[in-house]
Length: 133
Image (cartoon, rainbow, N blue to C red; front, side):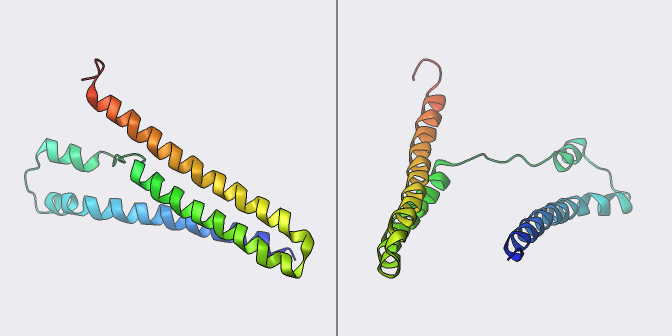
């Protein structure tokens, strides 16, 4: 009975630790050429060293990623609403709670789609500049 929350917490912990280890391994692999050059006594360009030592910058959230996530989430919400009809065949009281969950998921998906469009419009305005050109 108490195994489900424990399993969930173990899963979240494993995901977090895996992400940390993956980032560490990427960083180590990126610095390997620099270490090899130092060991061989080669002259290093300061700009190259600065570029390799700088942290990676993410490109941020993309409108396409939000749109895809929103479409998938909307589809899942519709699927849960359809599922509520089938579940209600076995238990009449389950119709509204399961349908409510589907509607909540659908609302999250619609929010992601709206955020995608808003982000795309914002980036277009930023690209046009302060005068709208």
